[in-house]
Image 1 (tube, rainbow, N blue to C red):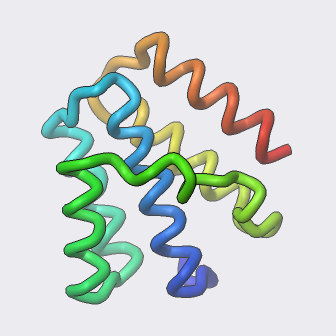
Image 2: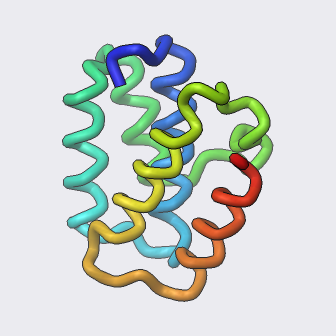
Amino acid sequence: MEKLSAKDRLRLMKFVCSFVWADLVVHDAERQFVAKMVKKLRLSPDEVKLVEGWLEVPPPPEDLDPAHVPVAHRALFLEAARAVALADGNLDEAELENLTLLEQLLK
């Protein structure tokens, strides 16, 4: 994660937050997962505010183009999406569909 540029760190968090919204409910466990990622990524206070906003309103779909994810970081993005999808202990159908689609698009 330390090799991500500032732009890619925010892009990662947009994807993570979009997966939080897959089942249309932001669970406490998902919020906790996002908070841990924010700390790991050492986001600035302004970046943290953006992420907090994406937990209130999902990021716009046009900001989530997997083609813009650098090839070198695609496995990390997919791993983070899987982890947040499982953070609440339940992988529902919408989350599974989104994960499958993201995996296909990142290959």
